[in-house]
Image 1 (tube, helix red, strand yellow):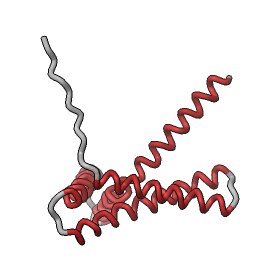
Image 2 (spheres, rainbow, N blue to C red):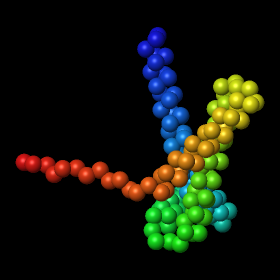
Image 3 (cartoon, rainbow, N blue to C red):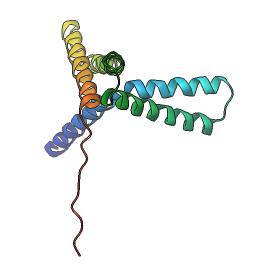
Image 4 (cartoon, rainbow, N blue to C red):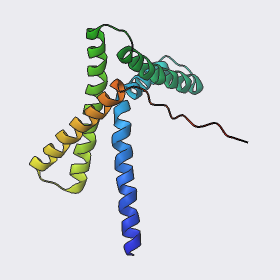
Length: 143
């Protein structure tokens, strides 16, 4: 029984980690969902909607990273960073609020946890945008 509690706690921590790591993709996901709803209202088929939404989400993420890491002017970089960080911080705030409500915390602790999770998620989004891409180089196989 103790082993199951430990494994359950580890699984819950990994789920929380996934929740907050995926919150930094709030702006591309929001753009994809908005395009999907717009195409649905125009009467397109489901395959077209899903494909277009997927491409739009990936394009927003790639364009944002390209603008921030490229030779764009500083005001453009700041606007892109603020859009991504703002969306991620809002998603993190909402996730923190939901976790605080599930935990049964008081109002002050609930707002504190939500604010802290919003700040941490916004920071993670900023760090993801600004940090250089790290590629894992593997050594060639020797035969």
